[in-house]
Image (tube, rainbow, N blue to C red; front, side, top):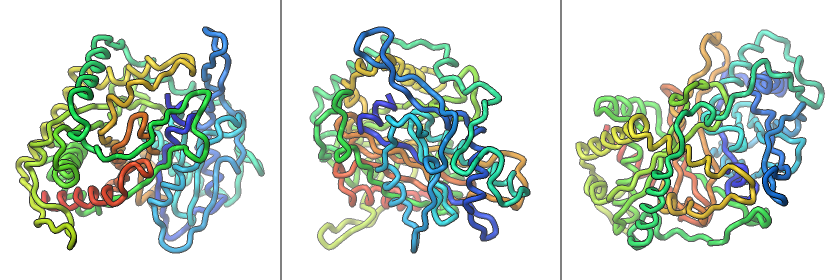
Length: 482
């Protein structure tokens, strides 16, 4: 499905952005290429591309097969940029998302690294080769390679020639797909129940009672034979919220005190803000949470590999109880005066605790999260047979949270070497007409450093100022709680 999303112009790519530091030094071209040569052979997924071949089942159809490149040209893998003035990460993210890989060129990889001002490393990759946590795996590998190479001469050596990275035969087999490590089977009762539930919900509840009821978007669908042309491929907009380390430390302590998580609290505060500040007449809120399945597989691949092992936790919740938690808005103006913001802290923490409890039940007891992942197998097969029918049932009018958690380097690295002081995560917006005209909140942080939240949405579907207002209100409510 991810390859179709990209090739039809529905969703572009994923990126993980990191700021590297070491005693005022910068990442020179030699250091970068030398480390990248190590990473390419450390992460076999970086040589993966997809090749469309005739179907073995139906004449005239096609199926995507995995292939591997024997070598990578340096100019296709890495780019060095110098940007004057203060770096604007949201603009960097948008620019990256609005560039698309040429998947028809079977000589080019499905990823790229951009080095900005010798400090910032932006790893951009096709969703088919990995999920957000795979971006963390890249930076762990790159950081370890930088520090391991510090004792070597400042020259490019080993696995690179003047123009290419040679890919060595991997010393171990590539990571197997997550489906190979799951005993569960798709429950058709679960599939049918979900389809009926959402169909009834959409049919009987008026659109105006949902979140994001004011979204504007075209209802044009792409097809395998008629993908979106370049000029109308999905364009991603990004707004950023930075929560400084001191606030995050206090917030995490309060979360532990109230037996919940930062993700559950963030979900609660977004619901409160949307219900109270933005859509005061909405009755029902839909939300989605990306859940890491690695610990649930029969064989945990670990955190240092590329894979797509993420499911979704869906919630449908009445918004009245969220709206009742807070009064006032994050800001006011002469044209729209509002009362000073306040919050009912006990109710907020109770809602966050309940969300965490329900999430744990869906993940570890009921199996709902695993079933939502296994449903993806339904879409396997010939490219022409994939249908987007029904996607909007589950996802329209919802927001998504995807929290990568805290970035941690590999163990046993020498002290005093390169380190990562800041990190951000972002996945390109999905075409609103297909599934996603809410916002996606992508979260990443470094231990004891700032937390960066990227609010992602399709250009023109939501108002930029509304998205900014949501982020400001969430931060202000966090401060009220701690």
